Length: 612
Image 1: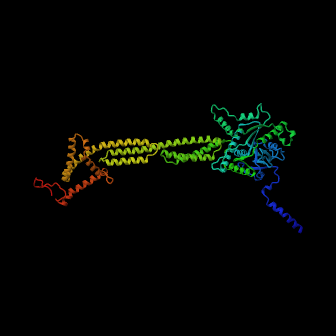
Image 2: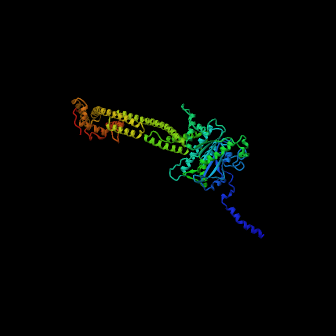
Image 3: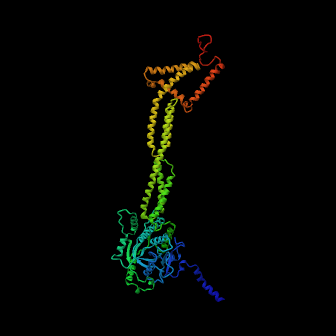
């Protein structure tokens, strides 16, 4: 019993050490391949594998990565084993040999240590899942392709036999995606406000596995495949092919071509063969490929500095989050098609913003609304578009579409402005016509209507048509005012002559009021005699007496309180009622005594004694 206790106490420190050991000590042997990125169950997105990240995180030196990409079952894993001088049993799993083929991205746990320009650098080799296999979406392949492009310092594009147009298209697309997400990452995580960090492309190595090149070098074959296609007829399909090639211009001089012959005719038995059994030309070219990779490899640079293991893992986590979060297109649709959907969405945002304004508006207000809506639309486009090389072309296209919509809005604003101003003009024109035919001509009433019409037009008529209709209004109202002034004195003269004769009859025979009769005779004699003496009525209009008569007339006929032109008939009706009342009942009630000098006729004599 005592011996057992002593053994338990002795083993207690070891147990505690196992419990509190750091996570990095959970892997004893790093001389193997580890997954660092795995597909989710739906095989549409990617997720990190913590086991593989530990192999990278422990490295303190600057890190460089060599990634091999290519079609499904094109020999990528075998190639990596050859570059690392590993057998298939100890290196990356080879598809035709094992059931567990490469899924996601794998890393060889033991880096190759190189001295690069005096800097000790740890070089990791990455194996990627081949594209074009069954049971996967294009989006998943594109994420793998783009992630490998971002992470690697050297990107080996492993192609069997030849370069297809689909290979160029896929590489172009992956480079654009990598550039886009790298740019977003750099912009978001840069310390300087508004600072953008340009995409630093990997060294691209075109590896063509082909025995015969038909008299051409592999570099000539690659250069020929990447040349622009002549398009004198402006064919859209050829133009799209050339755009794909233009997007690869970012690779610049970073592109290198290399050919590698087949290792052996029996491809399924390659893992069982030693170097002596392989084609010697292949072995020789393989060693040259190793030297080439070592000569072009450089530490991975992000934001102007190299990264150690911790920084590389953090960078991987951030890029993977951006890839999974962002809605990215598939290679089948290409950048233009995806950006077209975004363009339509942004154009809809602009159109909806402009639809909220109530036309007509001034040109400045429409321009301000256009600027705000365009800014919102462009902001959404900047956040969602893909492909920086296509961004300028897409922005120009969006601008063109926005300008088309804006032109329609300008035309609609002009139409609505003309429609509104025309209605106001017609209303004022009708008002001026009504003022021309007043029953009782009044300059004060005409001026009040004139000012009201002018004020309402000035306040309510808006938009580009206002200036045109203002000129029309000035001409129309000026003409109406001149015509009214011209006819005003003549109509007033005729009206006063008629009025004086009516008042003579009223004063003598109806109310028998001598003062009214005398005043009416004086007015009539003045009007008739003056025109006879001076041959025309026009000379009368400059006489001070006429001015006094006009001022009195205006005071009586129109005021803000009483518009006699409107109330003339009711007032006449009331006066008639009063006169009739006075004629029938007034004299009986008041007798022969009256305050006013009235006519009085005696029954027995012919003399007309004056009234009391």
